Image (cartoon, rainbow, N blue to C red; front, top):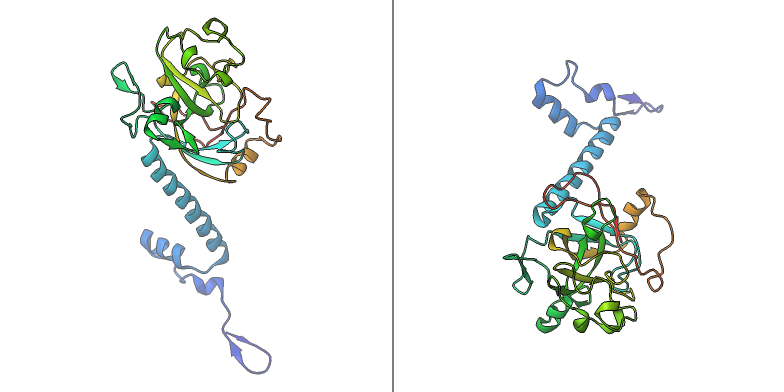
Length: 269
């Protein structure tokens, strides 16, 4: 209690009064005091603890759904415009998680990915166009930035896939001999950024993408939130021109399908 100067008395909060004279009793007592005290310094710590706990809980829920850690990736270039733009945060699911019937089979197992040519027959669309959008390790190299592009074709080992290719995406090749990775050196996906002029395989970004190189499929995006991740990773350069940058891609940390590493998503090209 304090005197306000005109004889009236008012109650004023006191840190000493906020804590029992002998201190909280036992672990339960301390926890109860921590969660109920109005002491400013403890309120700040409590807010930080609850915020971190909420983020971890959301992360665990997303991991349970996606099977990948981290389950969110940040797009760092314009190669998937207009369906994905730099700064989008994309939710990715392990391609073995929810296996569609239309996905091609490889060595007796589903690849878990529906390429655009098959999707055109079934009406399957993702992010504005036919075909699944995949996050993959170029040439299976987990030291390179993962790429997020659309699966266009599934090719078999030794296949002359020129005849099935979109002639506007082969870089002027007139036949299989002039097309990189044709005949196909192994079974895999032919991929393409929605805004790019050539297949990734023709631009030498990667050989046909083996199923084991696929980290997951993109399922949904949240605009703008990826800018936060890009800022922390130092990705502050202006967006890449998707017309001239044939090798541009999108970003995320490169989790191994077998043992996902801890950490935060890094950009994917």
